Amino acid sequence: MNQLNNAFTLFLSLLVEATPFLLLGVILSSLLLFFVDERKLIASMPRHPFLGAVFGSCVGFLFPVCECGNVPVARRLLSQGAPAPVAIGFLLAAPTINPVVIWSTWVAFRDQPEIWVLRILFSLSISIFIGCVFSTQKDLGPLLQRAVFRSRPRKFAEDKPALLQSGSYLLGQSGTPLALDANVLNTPPSQDIQSKPLPDRLQ
Image (cartoon, rainbow, N blue to C red; front, side, top):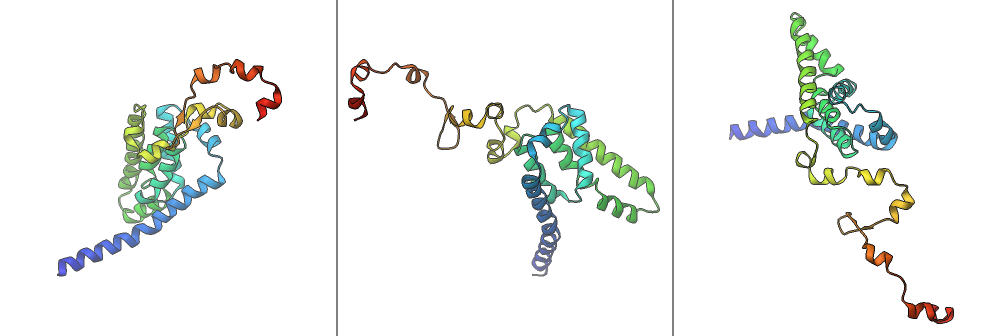
């Protein structure tokens, strides 16, 4: 019975500790959605694997969140078409390379500054390396949930104007584009219809 109480207490303590950071991550992801032009932000991100991993790791310094808080932000970046090295670098670097964790590490190991330096260097190196590894994955389908993968922007939808895009294809039940049959589009009108007077055609 005591073990059950201890396990329940530990569960509640972890839940209470993680919930604020999870909410912070959701809020940051929502702010990224409403107040930031995501297309310009994604377009300005470096496409080179190494530079993208470094950029994502450095961006993690600006978000003082833990592992449970940076997941919504990284998921939002991937769903909007951000390069995989940027999102993975941010996902791994944000929990350790941020002002809160850096300061707490310095307070805990003030007498051993080498631990403080090594933690930052190793965390940054690992996040950059893993980001470069994920850059070799061209198809992100196996790495993402189906809902996130389907929400990624399509290339053919970015290059077309909205009017042309909406009139170029039909949407199926799951939101997938359906190609129109070229034979139907190119079929000439019936001669019987052409030979009828205009009032008869309108009936």
